[in-house]
Image 1 (tube, helix red, strand yellow):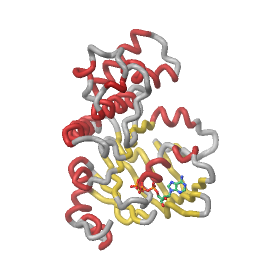
Image 2 (spheres, rainbow, N blue to C red):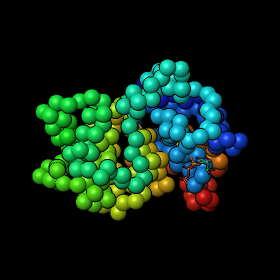
Image 3 (tube, helix red, strand yellow):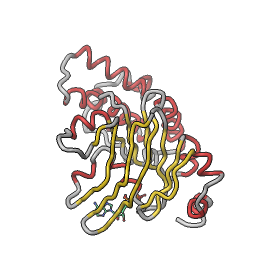
Image 4 (cartoon, rainbow, N blue to C red):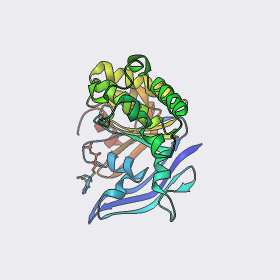
Length: 250
Ligand SMILES: Nc1ncnc2c1ncn2[C@@H]1O[C@H](COP(=O)(O)OP(=O)(O)OP(=O)(O)O)[C@@H](O)[C@H]1O
């Protein structure tokens, strides 16, 4: 089943076209990797999936993005509700300058949850799902900024999970982390895909090959090739994909 379905998507920043006629489906409970050289439109595309581009002035979008069959650019779509279902994790861990507990409960509180017992449960569940609970359970009231970079990124994943999204978008979530933290997050993503659908931008092709089910190769705003990950890395159809994955350009 497709969770996300993109048809004939074009995106313009003012007069500059950044995405050209993108068609792509994302399967439920899978990891989809977006790869391609710097500036090819990966992040722009990722941001179209939960309307993060709304905040960029003079952006124009044509085409259709459906999430669970709903046209997310259709009239009457509430962006807050949409983002509750589609969480996002960014390149640099960005915990709020609050306690670990308050970081995780931020979203649920924003959506009206006040019951202490329920909030406690969400904190434990989200931190366990983000493989961070054992490391922080005794210091929940301490500032999140005191955690290591890798722990902060897992906290940001826990914060995204706390509002119970169905889809998680990740923009180079491990690029600022050391290899051990990266390995922990990769392991975590394998586990999370049982429950969530994940779309991840990565510059690290080994990472895409290791963790994703499908890979999309972008170049100059076009989706050159989208297929099962082993096909993209071992038997790509397009010469440009082959050149990129073998390091001949980019
Ligand atoms: N806010 C913006 N205003 C104008 N142009 C933009 C904006 N954001 C991105 N672009 C342009 O759109 C194109 C695609 O950028 P995008 O950041 O999506 O690429 P990317 O593949 O994610 O790159 P990177 O891997 O370096 O993050 C680039 O040419 C970029 O300069």
